[in-house]
Length: 350
Image 1: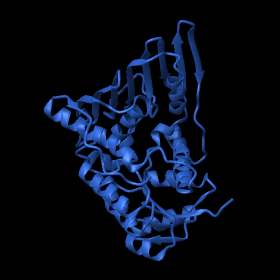
Image 2: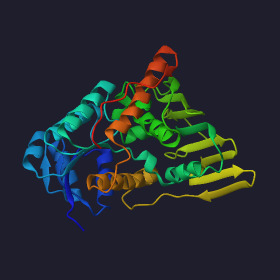
Image 3: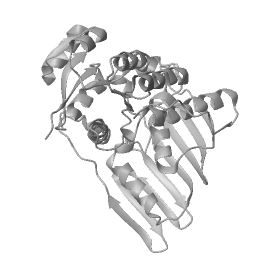
Image 4: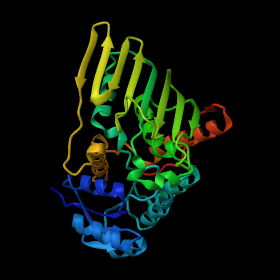
């Protein structure tokens, strides 16, 4: 096998731990340096994972290490600066979602990577969940005919704030945190949106931003409703962090139900099968299905960096998801529907 790609990870928070563990499941990449603004925390993290070099200054890291790419796993408000630092060094960038805290910043990042001639990839792992990928095949297989209505739901009372307390302080919360995943999934299944309407709510007084949102989208000939929420209330059918999907087609229906059951109903009856995710010993049991998807997403991005084919979730592609997020905020604020198509984003190599 050809040599491993050397990369640096920026960040040592909750998700960085699972991101790095997932990289270690793949043979083609090696983390050789770590940046964290709190050096002591970074050093503890590096010792645990055997990362040889630790920095508390990202510029010094980039100047001092021989790298093939950078994986940025920091807060959305610091992601942008890290992306542009790496691009200025001619390094491919993998960035967490949301790719930027505004559309303007996202466009700046796309432009920086385009002008530097480097790939700009987004670690959008949600669509790589095993059952969600399999459901895409069900829809593409045509058994239920043309979809005309769909519902995508991820609503939970799970205390996500215990692991990520910073989420409570976001003035824009559920649409940027969960909406980026679910609206990307809607695009993955049904293509680009022609319009949307959104309503939001704030249920838990401990959260600064909205913690519940409902988005209705026109996507081709289908009406797609996306429901999301972390209100920390009590729910009978709480299956965090599973995404439930129900699609009606001209010839039948298909759904992803609780516990990873895929059911397809046509004139021949209902056929059910369970499509469970892979399990990794390092995954948090509460997040098992999400953490397993990180491996598959990393494999796709690594393959693209090694010249093995295109990445699915490039910066240019994910920009369109971010457009939906901020269009949803506009709709919720004004009480009006937002119509597309928007102005295409600047092209970035992927």
